[in-house]
Amino acid sequence: MRISLRVNGEAHEADVWEGESLLYVLRERLGYPGSKNACEQGECGSCSVMLDGDLVCACLVLAAQADGHDLVTVEGLAEDGRLHRVQEAFVAAGAVQCGFCTPGLVVAAADLLQRTADPSDDEIREALSGNLCRCTGYAKIFDAVRMAAQ
Amino acid sequence: MDVLTPRTLDEALRLKAERPDAVPIQGGTDVMVELNFDRARPPALLNLNEVAELRGWSKEDGRIRLGAGLTYTEAMQTPLPALAEASRTVGGPQIRNRGTIGGNLGTSSPAGDALPPLLVCGGQVRVGSVRGERTLPLEEFVTGVKRNALADDELILDVTVDAEPGRQTFLKVGPRNAMVISVVSLALRVDGELTASFGSAGPVPGLVRAPLDDAESFPEQVASAASPIDDVRGTAAYRRHALRVLTRRALERCLV
Image 1 (cartoon, chains in turn cyan, orange):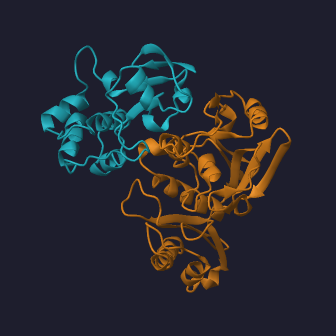
Image 2 (spheres, helix red, strand yellow):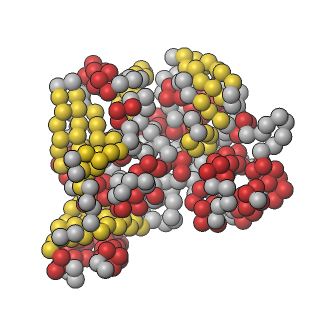
Image 3 (spheres, one colour):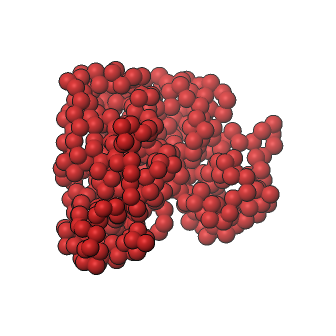
């Protein structure tokens, strides 16, 4: 079946298998590999994207459910060649080790700061609770989110 | 595989009648896992995302109506304390933004975190088909492990609960605060009587009622009513013990 969707402001059409996930469409059909494919069951958050403004796991959205809808992926956070402040803060804080979880965490942190300008540590912990990082222990990721909030 | 995407409830019910083998999908947090892992290949999926009638919540005739498409994020904003607390514990933000009350009812898992709070609130499930509508108490809707009373041509429309919820709370046990399937869960309501409902401690969520004077023995009554099993998340003995503890803590919160 054919679906139409907007990704980071750009209109796309894709021919998809009826049972496939939005994540597969983004990575394999439309050339947006920023959202990572790991658990495929909503446990790890590495495929986090914004669907009509809501933070979701792209692996749990049926491709056909995105038909006619708006998406923002990690590739869409930078504007005019300038990184999003969350991305800059992740670089400055060194909040990256292997880097696999980073795109999902960046999207989740950007979503948090859009809703809560100056989050408490508890609010950061809650907002990032759906994103797993198996390298860093989260300390520098928290530093980065605090830095981006300032 | 076909994907059917109705735009109205009437169209959804007509499509479900024409294709009773179609699996309804709303937030996808259960159905997509089955698809991604090749565990299920249903002949058709009925995508309910575009059916506005299934969304939101409202007050109607002294009851609160929760649309089947109400997400956990939205349920956190309802004036139902136990449901709001339970919804806060579901998954992480990404899951709460997509997972729905109707999906929790449809999956009918013993670990469904929305079910105990809805049970203590006198939840009544309204289901519909082209043949008409019927309403049944939640305790009759869930009939077994991942089994319910929904006919092949029916869809869950909403669940209504008491608008005067009394004092309520929800507690659950899991290895961390987020992203866990309940090892055991408990919702308590205290108004003219004590009403408790537990999850993950029997094939279906349990419901236990007692007079207010029974507060002392209520934790034991709740633990005795459970029929837990040993599994990867916990042993039956632990679950029974945890239910006793959770009931006592919930009573401390609600009996002020």
